[in-house]
Amino acid sequence: MQAKGCLYIVSAPSGAGKSSLIDALLNRFASTMPLKLSISHTTREMRPGETQDKSYHFISNQEFEALIERDAFYEYAKVFDHYYGTSKEIVEQWLNEGFDVLLDIDWQGARIIREKTPDAKGIFILPPSLEELQSRLEKRGRDNAEVIASRMDKAKREISHFDEYDYLIVNDNFDEALLALRSIILANRQKREQQQLIHEDLINSLLQDYVAQDD
Image 1: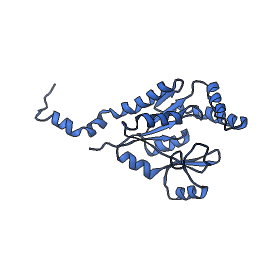
Image 2 (image 1 turned 90 degrees about the vertical axis):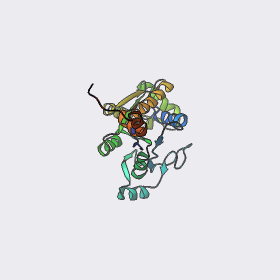
Image 3 (image 1 turned 180 degrees about the vertical axis):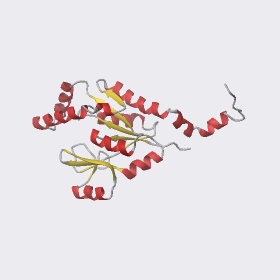
């Protein structure tokens, strides 16, 4: 029998390395793990190195607002004057097919998702320090000092919601953080209810002709 996948909410302040960790997880382990990343819709402009329908589904404000009217999003929010939203149809399809699905969203979106899907698991990624976080933002070289200051202020607000999540990963050593992220997903898949559904035939064969007795 096909067990339903688990929905994972992954949040972090900008610069904590969330996207890099998710990319590495998918590139190294997606072939051996039933794992999908939900690609969000956004109205912001495409940045250098990004790809349509891979980084985001880049659409206009008019298109986004039409999707809102159709109730097409699990959740959506406006961040830095741009819309971001998670497709409801695609996520539910993947979960029903047995894939674990990663949602790369902020704490506000996470609250909405938990209201709609209480069994979703939350993973929050922290930087090793505020100094390191600012250094990472500056090294990107794409924002001026004013924008970086705004992102740092937003990062502190984001971090203040860490205790709303089930798991906490400090991204100091990248390989260790990646291992922790993978371990969370693997461990959750080994829950008895999940494995019982996946291996129903095996369990029945192992218990064939067994007569229950009081221990």
